[in-house]
Image (cartoon, rainbow, N blue to C red; front, side):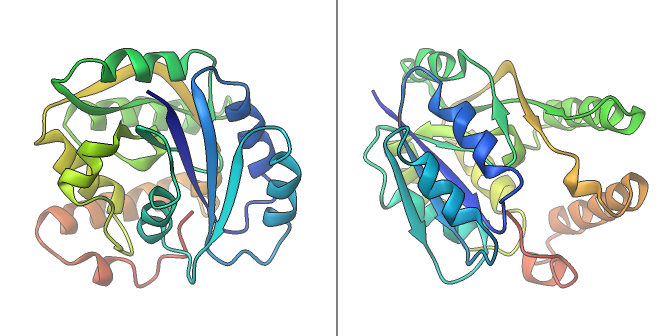
Length: 229
């Protein structure tokens, strides 16, 4: 089995270089596919430089929409396993081995990793703990670097072009296909999601999540949401 890593980008010049560098060092990762949603900064330039290090493709789509971007990346992937990693994520060595180990079991439909927010602030530590508690309730977000086999991804219909909660939507369908595993290895992500303040961002997240599970369509929940990456 070979792992294709799919990375959606949109104005990621501050993070994409380090993410690609971390991914390029991992054993069992055969290719990196960057799917850009129309960046106006140096994202593509940096990605093209990194592309010389490992087998890397750069794909452009018409808009910044994670679901659309990641599904487009799948269409260019050659691997047997798809691993969806955000542009500000830092996996650790051994992550690829763990993916391979779990997906050798036919009962496993996919999985994800432990989320750590970068930084030593009390809010970063708190959000890391909260993500762990949310995970135990069955909610899986894209920050945790979801992975699955090609055949399973195709069986559930893949990512949908939703303006928000495309990750939760896919994970929910994968969970119905078999055992969805939790890999207790850290994926470190930046604190940029909380640029407007932890408390306010967290409050909006709780409200949106509650409305989503109440059946409110994602397009209504994303009206004040900036393009996701």
